[in-house]
Image (tube, rainbow, N blue to C red; front, side):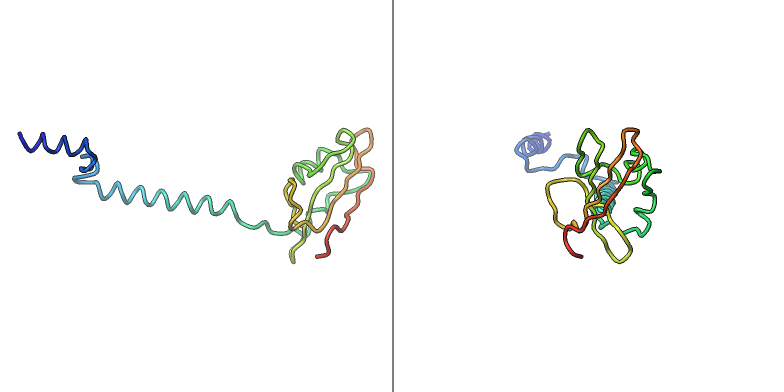
Length: 136
């Protein structure tokens, strides 16, 4: 009984690991946690991958035919909106495969083009321009 009292006082002082970490299956639980951490880090690492260009990214644009909602669906959130959403601006770059959308924000690093979309009162694209911001 004296040993049990000593173990309890050492456990309270933080010198003895909790019993759930000892015994049969402890190594298996530790390996399972390590495996879960490795899988989680691999999954999160995939989120940081570099976007790949698409040659057809802007092919859907047609003056007089593309709706504002279609533009938002294809290109996502614009970097800027003007005149109550009548004018949308997107930041793009280009790699050897095609155009890549650069997310909105204050940072212009990597931006090579600004895509300007102007819609009429009915929300139909009246004209668009791809303006070079920085030479590729």
